[in-house]
Each structure stands twice: as structure tokens, then as C-alpha cells.
Length: 597
Image (cartoon, rainbow, N blue to C red; front, side, top):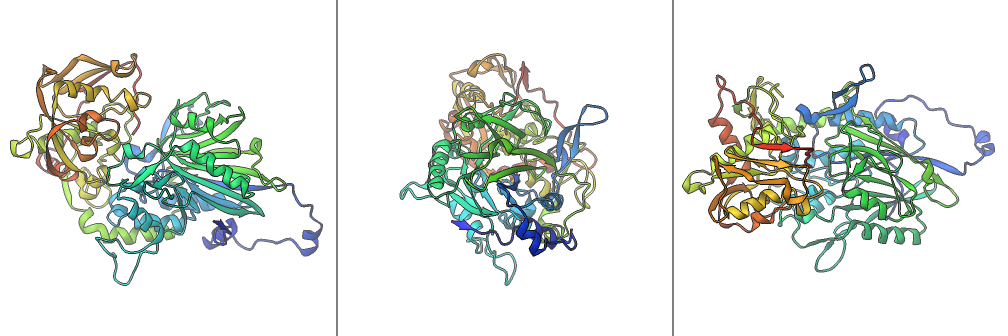
């Protein structure tokens, strides 16, 4: 599993991009007399949660919060796009003695149409061109099942859709996917390699990759069929010991699990002891073997470059570069040539905005153009009209305007008796992948919603379901947003019109839902009555920590979530009467409230 990186040196990548001229090399005499350093410098460049966003993300989900140096006030800066990310990384590598590019999962899955229509092959190709070396596997890499993940690594045409161009076969990823804690439940063998070892200036460096243990709770059952997901900490510690036994003492963990910084500004200072960050990664980081010198994370789509104490109380770097390619993290390490270990006090980590003011990388522009032309006949079909931006992914409120629209579409599409008789619908916030943006993305005109834009919002194409829940189960469903597995990180469901209630975030657990405030069509919920409730198949199956849904009865399967969304846009908007953003008046929140998507 030892690799010598012949194609990843900073000089080679930069020269290939045409960004530098002739580099002066030391003479033989100078080299002979030069004193060998006791340490060598290694640069890590890290990304996470790209989700196939090759083109710049639209709307508020394509911005980064930063402090304006002139006014001192927070501002939203446009960021992201693989053309800009490639340029930023290539420029960052120029001064480095050696550079390795890493990622922490969810690079594909829930992707916009330009990538998703081709089962994310375009994103894998782009990441190869980008110079990615190694990544952990995220939960979204399992969206199409383990066989598809293995195809992305090894190559070959899609088993159903085949090859997309005559005479061209997908080659697979040239970078390394790692999934140390994902095993075949029958054989116990890892699905993919647990770690990857390379050399930097003579020093062995190992990378251990894991995904979150709770992946089966947030992916469809078919996606993780036959797989077992072990604890992140015990897995990393197991393989750290194995690496040390093999003489690999510089170790980095790539974890698809993350944290919640106290501020949304990208360069927020978490404090020397990490007191400014919470969430699952804090407990994980505190228990990982001190031999691991740095931790690169993801999943929560937040930006942070923090230090969290290891089991011996020594600060250790823990980072995340938000999502969608809007940021990258630069982590500078010193490797001790005698011990082969990362010199922990020397580790410096900083997030950088992928600003759209730099030049576009021509090879990425060509790749996007190629796949956009193939996708155009489907992507450019108009579906409806909107009067202004309708924010979804980029909205941090518990109730999101686009969430309301999606839930309304689902309830309306399944309200007829022969469609399921849905009285209310709920949308999981994590399934809303973007905003609906008023400004045109191509030549369709401002305010026109195309199929490609709707697909970017709802790329999973889950089938809709309608189930019968008792009033007591419906109350439980709302309480599960803020209790059980969602206690520490609430997931606030987006309700269709007619369902209203109050959340009191000053309380704890299930008590945050004010039961007496729940109304459906203006009437209190009767615990003994039966209600027909609609949701996508993932949520209806109990996903995201909602077992009350799984307990529902009399299931009826409907059209896909994307189809009902498209139909709703067509039926409820026109050029003369475009759809307006809802008022966000269905959930009243008292006290602090937040949601993780």
C-alpha cells in the first residue's frame, strides 16, 4: 500500500499548468555542501463535500461568510466552482517543498445534473485533473450502492446506462478511496483500502480514511446493503497502531464526520482548546490516538480550522473546508526525519476562499463544456417561473422557504385519493441541495426554472410514499426532530401548508416541541385519529432519525420527488404569475434554533 507519487509533485503540477518558467536547480557542489535539515516541510491541501459541484454553486449556497476588512462587518462572498478551485490549488502548490491533496468524503452524490446525469464520472475526471491523491468515503458515496462506489474507483461502464460516448470507457479514479470502517458483513473484510501510505522527501506518511458510523441511518437501505459500519475512533486507533508497527509515524486521519463552529464566518477562531466548536467531531478527536498528527473532516458543511486536545491533552489540528468547493484548507506540517513523526506544535492550518476573481483553469472549463453539451437537451427544459430567489440550502433558518415549496408540492401531488390522500407532507432539510435562483443560469431568461435547476435542488429522485400515522405518532415525529439521535443536532422537517406549531429551543429534547401548539388545518392533533402523511422514501423509511415514520401503515408509493416538484412548478406558476417565496410562518421558534443539513 506504499505509493511513490510521481505525478503529484508541486513543480510537476504547476509546470503542467503553465504557471511557472524555468526553475534554477542547485549545483552539485552546493548540494554536497548543503546541511541536511532535521525536518522537512509538507503541505496538505484539503477539500470535502464537493457533491459534484463542477459549476459555481448558485445563490446563497455559493457564497462564503467573511469579515469585510474595511467595515468590519460580515459579508457574503461568491465562491466555488471547479475551474476556480483548480487554479487556487495549483497556485497554492507553487511554493511548497512537497504537496499532497486530500479530501474527507462526499465528493460525489447529491450532485447537479451536469455530473449526476453521468453517474458522477465527470466529477471523478475533474478530481483527477485537480491532482487529488486520496479521500475518505462519505455517506453520499453510497447513494447508488457499494458496487457503484467500486466502479468509480476501478472504472468501467455503468451496468445499466452503459458508456456515454461511443468508443470511450470510464477509467475510474486515479486517486485512492479509503473506507477503513466499512466492511462486508459476511466476510468482515474492508470494502476498500483502510489506509494509504506514501513518501514525502524520504518520510513515510500514512492516511487513514473513515466515514461516519451512522451512515446506515442517512442512506437508503439498498445503498448500504451487506455492509457494516464500525466506530470511527476504534477503527482509526486500530490502523494507527498497524501503521506504527510498519514504521509509519506520520499519520493523518480523513474523517467524514464534522463539527459545529460557534460562528458561520469561514475563518472563525475556535480558540486554543477548541471551546468554539461542538458536535460529534469533538468527542471523536479527543479519543483518537495521539500518533495521528492532524485530522481532516467533513459532513456538516461547516468551515473551521480548530485545535482540539488529544487524549493526552495536547492540541491537535482539526479542519473542515465547508462544502461545494467554496474553500480549501492549507495544512503545513513539519516531518521529523529521525523519528518519521509529524512535529505537532508546527502544524498550521488555514482555510482559504476559492474566489471567482482568479483565472479559470482551461482544462476544467473544457471538461464542464463537454458534459454540459451532452446534458443540455434535458437540463435546459423549462418547468416553471419564480418571482425571486427561493432559498433552500443556503438558508440557515429552521424553516426554509424552498423547504415549504417542496413540501407543498409533495402534499399537492399526493392529495388525491388515488394518489394516497396525503393530508400533510414533510421534507427532510438535508435533501434540499441548493436554492432556486431568479437569475438565469444559461440562456433561459431570469426567473425561469429549468429541469437542470430543479434537479440540482432535488437530485436523489426518491420515490414518494404516503403512510397512515396516528396523531400520537405524528406528534412523536415532530419530537424526533429535536430528540433521540437528533437531540444534539436538530433536523427540522419542512412542513406543507396547514401544519403549524411552536419550537421552544430553551427546553431540552422532545420538550422543545410545544405539543399544545400543533395544528393541522387549524385543528389540534387528535392522538387517536389517523392521518395520511407524505414523504420521500428515505424519510418515510425512518431515515435521518425518524423511526415514527417507519412505523406508519398502509403505504402507497407515488411518483418521484423530482417529478412531483416539477409538476407543481408547472401547475402553480407562469410568466405572468411566477411563484413567490412562502412567508416562513409555519414553525414559530422561541430561543436559539439551528439545523444541520
